[in-house]
Length: 84
Image (cartoon, rainbow, N blue to C red; front, side, top):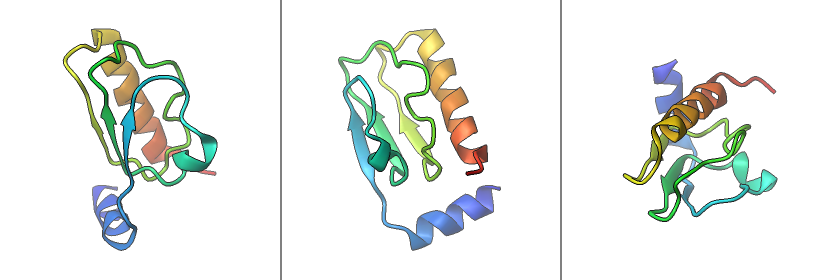
């Protein structure tokens, strides 16, 4: 699986997104490869990164609650295993 993600990242342009809260536009979800969570974000709503099939990295901030870390980890795992 990791090798497939590496191959995908090599042939697709990187799309880095600064997440500042709220919802992520549906048309952007299919393109995201990297997300940086802004310093003001303390909570990430359920399903925020659902459908982000190309997402390979989420850079968290120190202000996130522990529950949010688990939420992001779950979203990233689900995004990698999501089949349309």
